[in-house]
Image 1 (cartoon, rainbow, N blue to C red):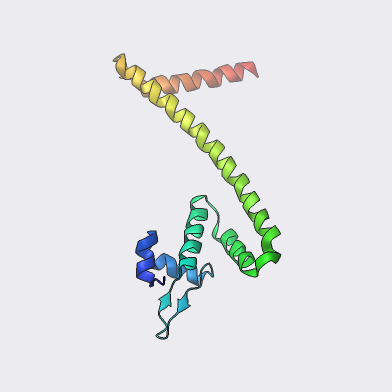
Image 2 (tube, rainbow, N blue to C red):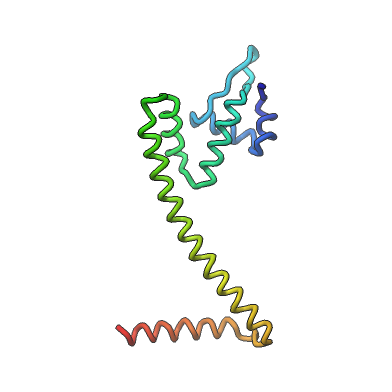
Length: 144
């Protein structure tokens, strides 16, 4: 099946501008019909979906460009493609650890405020938070 830029845009949920940008950056090269209108095949659709997926993981444009060039080169680029993916996987894992720590903190804060709210003692929560932070700093300072 062949898609025009507007059709593909709607189908995969990105703007036509994004598809043109990906083309300009060499990430996807659509076919052209006899009137020079862009046409995208099912293969193009799947490739753009892959690009979008990798962007969602935080892969940089530069890494995507390099990966795309290697992919286009075929078998000879496989080892380096795997290296790019392995490196990126490590970055994603680090981000996940950061997100998990932040999620844990959010859960603690929500629990703290919900318990205070239930006890009807939520009047000066921020001041109590600052006092606790300051007392922890003083405690750490005295331990050093």
